[in-house]
Length: 354
Ligand SMILES: *Cc1c(COP(=O)(O)O)cnc(C)c1O
Image (cartoon, rainbow, N blue to C red; front, side, top):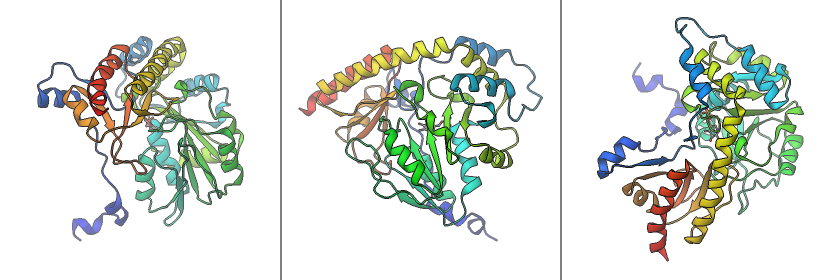
């Protein structure tokens, strides 16, 4: 058997994940002293110092972690108000999504996705040989439901990455109540938004996932959680890898939940700056969209990302996202000094446009 023959056929249609350029590369390439990366929606204020201490204090690296840590599940239950029996810990939302796809999808099943949205949904669906049903969005990027999705899994990202908008409650309700399948709600950015979709966890076909990667500033630790009906949790515990998250990650997440004040204070600063950057970009004449997350989406001149990189600011070029076009850009809101640097450089480029 040759190597090609051994690889699953569906992978020929999967695009590799291409990460953005890193800071060191851009410094060297353009001979810059200062480079700011606003491309991955990280919380650049970092995690709570208490979370960092909890991570550092852990020494038993030779022992396997608990598969579903009670101490963290208790805290998430308190944080969300959802009963512990519905909570599952996983290696980020990415890891949880993978588990859910493993439970439900058989070859040829369909998955409903509403582009532009988080690209990993399409990657996973393609790996699983699923048919992709497209749910269209209107000009404000709200999902339009003309006919209810018949798919095994429907993915709803709210606030949506990369467009930043919240999904309307009535749309979600219609999809949840009319659909024959599972509705996966991705709330990676919920801490930055003015409302959430937690009420839908009452339904027996809804899974709602969240993460410590964004507002809590723990992206490197790969830890997230989901709220799911008990019947799904039972299946999930069969398909997950036995030890999905490390104890240092669990300890850090617990400490982060014990220090909500820290997270909230960074989120407040980020939200304030988000509104300032939004207004400034409008002043520069950019087509920028309101956001409920820690990033902004804009439609600008196609050379914008390259021009920004030359000036020491890395932003996310979304032109390769399904449902996006050339010149679509996502910029994360960082610390105030980062955002000011971004605005200074953006003004140079957008100013020339007019
Ligand atoms: C960042 C992001 C994720 C990934 O979260 P992890 O918990 O780090 O795996 C999932 N969904 C969306 C929409 C994201 O933007």
